[in-house]
Length: 167
Image (tube, rainbow, N blue to C red; front, side, top):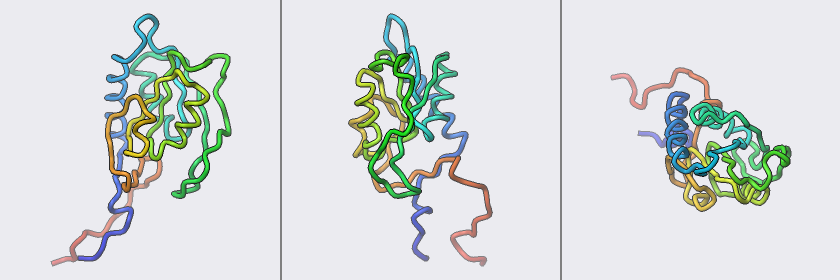
């Protein structure tokens, strides 16, 4: 048997799986909400956090949704994280009662920057890797640090040759 390519060892997430996992995260976050007011807003980390944030906002009936854009990847290479678009800080404040949503925490560098801007926010990701776990308050699925997650917005359906030749 030939050696597999790196993308064949990855964790492939379908739209259905992402939807199920984001709903599971919403269910978990419902019990974490501040007792007096509930969650008052969501800040989605673009771009990966936008799809789960939309699902969580719907499930928890949160109408105030903003974004923060942090660039830390160039294709599959991680670099220094930089905020390129901040949320409306007059609305978000220090993050009290706010959910920060992302698809994945990898090393935690992105969330480190985001947490500095909104230190009282509750950070939640759908997926977490060990190096970044301490940066999140809630997540659904942990994957190994060396696993590359392929999200549905990164993929296209196409024919794939079987592992074994025709017999």
